Image (cartoon, rainbow over the protein chains, first blue to last red):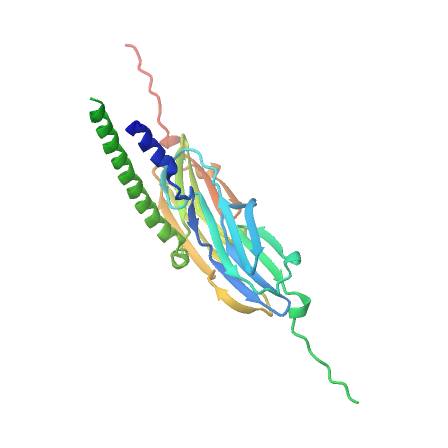
Length: 128
Length: 150
């Protein structure tokens, strides 16, 4: 077999996946009260369509892809297209059906309501 | 002759491999600084891009969670200053588990390569990024000079 072919094949055989975009970790704030867990994440430049929020088996993963519209030559660039990725462990008591997400000014706000069973309950003592 | 050619191929193959490795080394290095949350936190000033196309400059700045009212843009000649403040309020009645997005005020100034026509500057705030379109002033534009025939 021709050596040249072998070399070409070797390149294709390279199974290691390289990401096309840089991955960045968004800064987050996490709050909690009796009813829900609140998560705020900075994702400047990401549009709603490019955000995905997954909850699977106790892991919440958020991912947002930023595609900037640029024209002209860059004199300097300090930020560029990026993929914001971060995952968290969430308690199983989160009501996955009722999770809500909103995006405003490049900040993603996630409301993770707790299921009824997990909410703290005050127990009344009956007098006999 | 054939063996020679294959030798050359192999050599180039090895060089490609090395180049790929070097590329990855640099991109990994970049990535580590980009993905480090501390990097984005400690630097108060927003990251910016400066683009140039024809007669306009475009400045983009990352300002997540900053409203239009909290941003100030000042232009004088070729001097541009972007300042503002970001307020992150803890919602009432919530316990804080993690607080990485701090309130901060920032200010950043630039000297642009040319003078700007301050009257025609357009600013837009979209998805946490500030876009500034800065047209060059007339005096800074190149002028054609006609040659008079004597």
